[in-house]
Image (tube, rainbow, N blue to C red):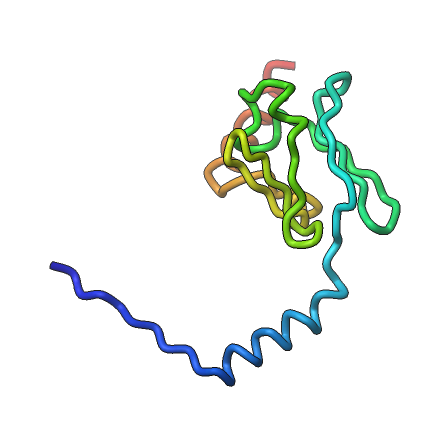
Length: 122
């Protein structure tokens, strides 16, 4: 039977992590409103700085097969640093979306192959 690992974290380490998170918080980009656009088949994000971002649904892991009514039900997590679709149990980090990360490494590889195939067939 495998041994159970124990991780010990001190109060000082926890306090240091909280302080570091607070220091870096000012660099977070936060969403104030998220919605699904049926017309463009995209997730539309309004950031706190007034920037609007449109992400095609086909790029987002976990949302490609979702029904439009489920896509409209988006919860903001972490004061707008995350997005959650409860009906599909799918979540995405805003920082990842802004960096062009739309899912796991495997998903990103799938998107890359899909893009290469469409270029070759064009």
